[in-house]
Length: 466
Image (cartoon, rainbow, N blue to C red; front, side, top):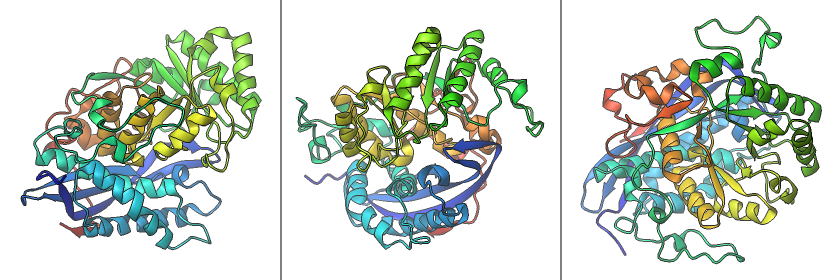
C-alpha cells in the first residue's frame, strides 16, 4: 500500500576524497597504503513534494573488494568509474518507497545489470562485493535523508508506520527453521532506540604491525601516535584485539596468536579474535591451530572469542563444511556474507555468526541482521577502516543490532588525521578511550552526523545533479 512518506531519489552528488595511510595495512597477499573514500549526497522527495538531503560515505578499499593479480590502478579506476555510473543511475531509478524497499529493489534488479554493462579490466568483471561497496554510499545517504525528512533518527523509521512491505517480501527462512517473516519488520529484530552509548573497540593487529621492539624496521612514522602494540594497548586502554593471520603458514599463524595473546595477558586485554584473511582451503588448517592452542596455551585459547572468515570469498563455489571449526569457536562470515542468501547458505555449512558491514549497504546489513537473529546466529560489525563520515553509520549499526562484543574500529590506527573535522564534533568516535568508543554525540535526525558543525572542505564533485 502506497504511503505519503514514500520517497524517490531526485538528485545526487559524488565526491572522491583521497587518504594516505600512516602505516601499511595488509589484506591477504596485498598491502594497502592509500584509499579513496567516496562520499555521496542525495536528495529524496516524498509523495507530497517534501524533500531532504542525506549523506553517505564508504572507502573504496580495492584490495579487499577485488582481490586479483590485475593492477591496483586498473581496479581502482574501474571502481571510481562504476561509482560515477551509480551516481547517475540512482536519480534515474523511478521506484518509490521506503529506503529499505528502494535499496532492496535497486540491488536486486538494477545493480546486476549495471555490473554486467560495466567495462571489464583485462577480461575481469567487477566483483559483486565491489559493486555493493560502490553502491553503499548512496544507499546510506538515502537512509540518512529519509530520517531527516521525518525528523527522526534513521533506526526509528524501520517499522510498519513507514514500510509498506514486511520482511517476508525481502527475505525467506531456512527450510529447517521455524521462523516466520510475514508480518515482521526490521524493528522487530533491531533496536529503534540506541540501547548503548559506549562500545568496546576492537583494535586490528595487522600482519605487518610491530608487536615489540624486535619487529621495528626503523621506518615507522614519528607522528606522535603509538607504534608498538603494547603502546596502543596502554594509550587507548584496549581490551579487544583482532589478529590478522596469513592462512597459508600455520607456524607463523600459531606463533602470531601466541605472541599477541601473551602480550595481551600481560597488558590486561580480555578478548582476541582471529582473522585468517580468506586464504584457507581446508578446515583442518584452522582446527589444528585451535586444538594446539587449547592444549598448549589454554588461557589464550579461552581469550579467543571467535574466528573470522578463514575460507574463500566465493561461498557458492567453495561449499566447505566448516562444522569442525564452529564446534570449537564461533565462526563468522565476513567477505562471503554479501546478503542474507549467502548467510543462509553459510548457516547450512556450519557457520554460526555473521560479520555485518555498512559498506555492503545499510539495506543489506539490516536484512542480513534480521535473518541471522531470527535463526539464532551471532552478530559482529566489522570495520573497513572507516574514517570520516563512514565511521558513524558503522558504529550505529553495531549499537542497534547488538554484537557478540563491541565494534571493530581501526581508522584511528591507519589514518587518524583524515577524520580531524569530524572528530571535532564526535571526539569519542574517532579516539578510543578506556578501550571504548562513545556514541553520545550522535544526535538528531538521520544518522546524526551534524555536518553543519564540521569544517570539511570537499573537493570538486565528480558528478552533481541536485
